[in-house]
Amino acid sequence: MRWLAASALFLLAACATAGPAPEARRISYASVDPLQFGELRLPPGSGPFPLAIVIHGGCWLSGVSLRSTTRLASALRDAGVATWNIEYRRVGDAGGGWPGTFLDVAAATDFARTLAKKQPLDLSRVVVVGHSAGAHLALWDAARARLPAQSELHSGSPLRLRGVVALAGPGDLRSLAARGDFVCGGGTLEALLGGTLASVPEHWAQASPAALLPLGVPQTLISGASDLVIPSGMVAEYARAARAAGDRTRLVDVTGAGHMDLVAPGSQAFPTVLENVLALVGAAH
Image (spheres, rainbow, N blue to C red):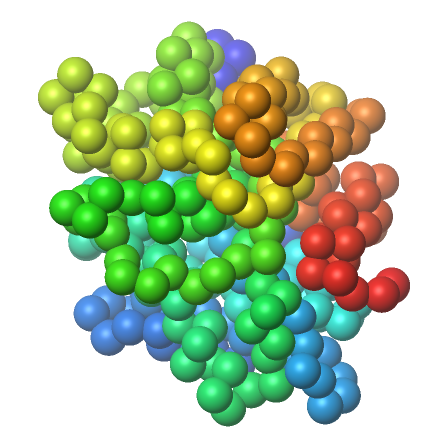
């Protein structure tokens, strides 16, 4: 089956991108679970530095960790952008899924205010960069200011973001669920959201960026034309909806790029990723 083959390729490639975390400080952003931590990387110099909050993917499942975005975070740091590569509870972890996965992403993002008290970070230039399932969470991170006050995912004062760079990720969970060859396998979204669309429609509405448009922040959506996991057409569909809602949206489809190429420094796709992140934070390169 095509989705099984693509899933195996995705997991193998994600493991291949893993590596050490040189010059990174591991810092806890909450105290409920050991997975609530991030890795902070600072460029050389005195700053203040723009900040990229990096969110890894992996089908929202516990099998893939922030190691899959270590090289991405290091490359952005080398280009002059501080990075906060976050870990979070996922489906399969105690407390993961609904609402823990989303609450962790929100808490890790807002923790940038605490980091900036001691680190040279420019909080007027914060972007969220997410890959695959992490791209969905990055878009949701920007959307959460629009959540109703009664939502379990609501937070009082979300960190203001300069924008989002979503790499090969879905913006519309309903559209993703409708795919017959969904690479993560049946039941993954239901496990993430605490039930089916029919049983908990409010969860799906509060977790899907497409249902919360307009997000109110610039969004750069980068896809790989050869991506077997999240087809570029799905990314383009969300981009059209965001534009129709009034959001400033940039869509970039990289010819010949596969799913993992977008987080692999040295790939032919990575200069496009780096250029767009730097443009959004207003950093020179």
